[in-house]
Image 1 (tube, rainbow, N blue to C red):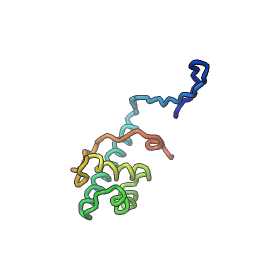
Image 2: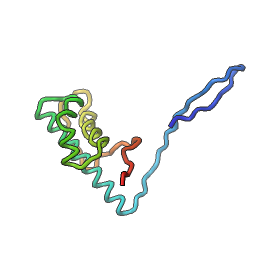
Image 3: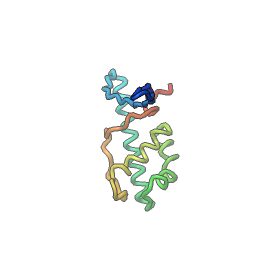
Image 4: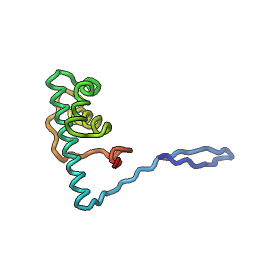
Length: 122
């Protein structure tokens, strides 16, 4: 969340907005770690599925793959809407500029920490 604070320079007051970034390390207990790893594996399996579905259909843009695979990913892998969208985007990011094919992702490839992605809805 951006933080705003006033700054005065030569009699003029400016409002400065600063966005802070925090690097943190998760320290889950054994049960939480198990659930995180299982979730990472499901997202990466879904990303591999999305890449294969797009390649087999001959479509290589995120909107095309989204239309093709979104609901199947939600149902087959049991992912939230935001995680399904991230899974569809992962192979496109991995393939770089070509956008033509991404190899299968590692089962424990990294997932981004974004607002709402890791929020528990239980």
